[in-house]
Image 1 (cartoon, one colour):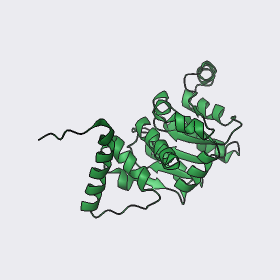
Image 2 (cartoon, rainbow, N blue to C red):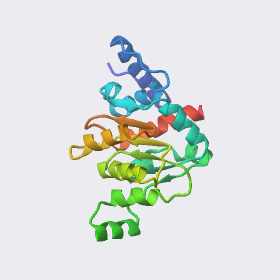
Image 3 (cartoon, rainbow, N blue to C red):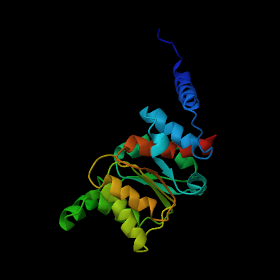
Image 4 (cartoon, rainbow, N blue to C red):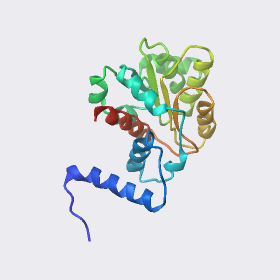
Amino acid sequence: MLEIIKPMDIEKRSFEIISGILAEEGITLDPQNEPVVKRVIHTTADFDYVKNLVFSENAVQKAKEALLGGCDIVTDTQMARSGINKTILARLGGEAHCFMADADVAAEAKERGVTRAFVSMEKASRLEKPVMFAIGNAPTALIAIDELIKAGRLSPKLIIGVPVGFVNVVESKELIISSGVPHIVARGRKGGSNVAAAIVNALLYQIAR
């Protein structure tokens, strides 16, 4: 029989169900990472993320400190940018950017024969503020970020690397895991813009509360 739940209680009930299923499976999450993992499961209804999400040491704490310091967020899709809670982000002094549709990015990418994602990350490296990345679609964005880090042109506060797909996806994520930069990565082929936004929001909601 269907349970009638008030709209405001649906999310609370969903998280209760997630917690119950994890308890039944005997799964205990790292307390620091737990809110992120649970929000990704809530967004995707996919418990594989318990195993897939890889966190560098103290990634969540470092990310929250960066957000409290007013760092900006760069995404590789408008969908990810749209999904981020920009009200909380703005309150902290940050802004969300997506350069993929910028005319200068499109023109340069065409001229150089590279992807817009690659050029977008180069443009992001020229931002004057500290920045974290939320990449949910383009593995070439992660490849560009890795190259910019190695060239000394970029020092991200956090890389959320969760592109979904089959071509260069697994390999690009492994680059980030081995980069030495704070990261939250969905190992393997799963991910997406919704997952990238969910991870950012999990961090923002912890701060807001």
